[in-house]
Length: 400
Image (cartoon, one colour):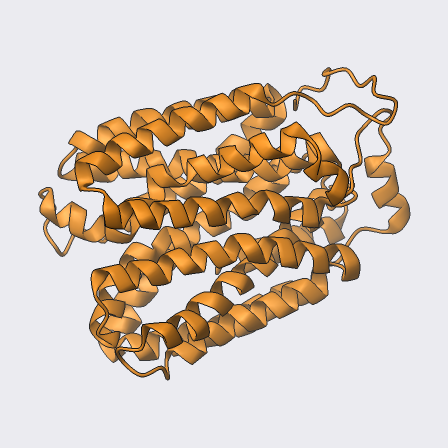
């Protein structure tokens, strides 16, 4: 199926869409300009980031419902409109009004990014049902590279014309590119789609059935626990880099390095999980998050950038493996909405990370991040295969 020209075109369209959705990975480059342009305190700007990520998790659920009911194109087009519209609206918001910023920017931008995510992921996995890790990896590379794209865009356009003009220009790009990419999305022909799912004994759970499984709640907890090792620090990465010895002019390279590492993780980890299995790769991801947190606590200069890159590699790599693991466990038929329920862990993780960033000193945040990574590892270890229709499914697939 994946050799068909239509499949390659849809994969390319999905990658183009994902290039515009990696805002959480790049928020460090937005934070200070947003504070200056809108008169926000650090906590207010961090709250805008936390609400955006929380809405991303909720939006994955809503977008998944729409995707499963109407197909990837309507969900993707609505997502592009929300994402681009949120950025355009931010260009006209008054200074000092954090509530309006949350409602007009964080809410639609988070929901829009999330409407696009399940649309792309569920669609490309159906076209590449025998290489789901590869397909999600290709689109994940684009999402990872979006951090570098946003860094350059904010530095060039925002530096020359101001942050409001930068938001407006980004919104226009998102409406044009995101809309065109979403319009190209389509599920494979029904016969092929059924054939891709028709493996004897394979599970095919509805959302209600999935929510009653122990596996879902363990996966949800694992997703939530992966967030603090990165989100406790990413909004302030430029300030942390400057405080630990990088010249202010070079501090944005931390975001670029983190973006490149994120892209590599989103490609390498899903591809490796196709060959080695999802759980072994996720074990490595959570161990990497724990080790990376330890290194990040003591690193300075360019070593800080390297440690941050290790964290984003593991975090993004794990996030890219989760959609394939989700369909391995619960089936492809309801992939969009089932992934949306799993993504609620991102909402929980982002809100916990925001609370931690405001309540804990930096040294305590490092300990909390490491503990979360190890707890996430334990959750992954406890997940077992979901029994198939006859309750006799053996865990024989290399992807389990």
